[in-house]
Picture 1 (cartoon, rainbow, N blue to C red):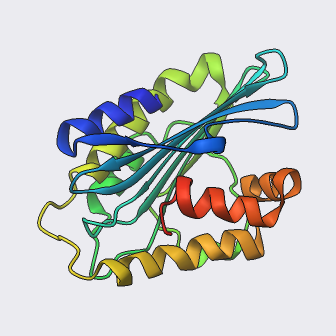
Picture 2 (picture 1 turned 120 degrees about the vertical axis):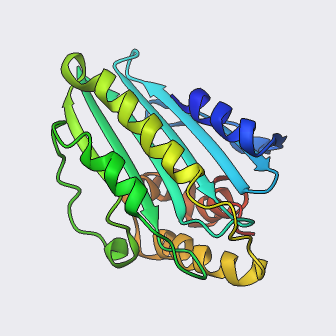
Length: 216
């Protein structure tokens, strides 16, 4: 799915690869991570993280967009396949300088309301997480196709939501994203805690700021 999302991005905002150095391939807690990052012309910073482990029984894909050139929310896609279960998590965070309408995103989300919901729990960042975010979980054989369609339609609505709002203040836009990234490192998050425990806070900050979110 991350390849499909990258293709959609590239059609509208041409992408070019960024060197990830030692972070390109990593092994943590029995999982092998492959990480790539891109500059999307006219959009901002994009990163993809793929992980697999436990003899292929677990696979995780992540795609993050930090839109520094268009005034869109921060976008984060996570897909986890494990032991016959499929989990889809799409989170959008309020990092816009102006206003953003969630109407089209909410319409796409509602159109797939029949797919089983997942309780996302409570987190420190809930106050900036948008209502159009998605959290679903079910047996892969029952939900995977639906998750694919939901992801594509929701992502298309995000990517084409508004072409006119070009960011005028790059640093102000980045600062809003930095609040979230700093919060992840200092207050924690599901995947952040895994990285901090495995490679330490300093390396985790370097990974997040330079590669995953491009806020440095």
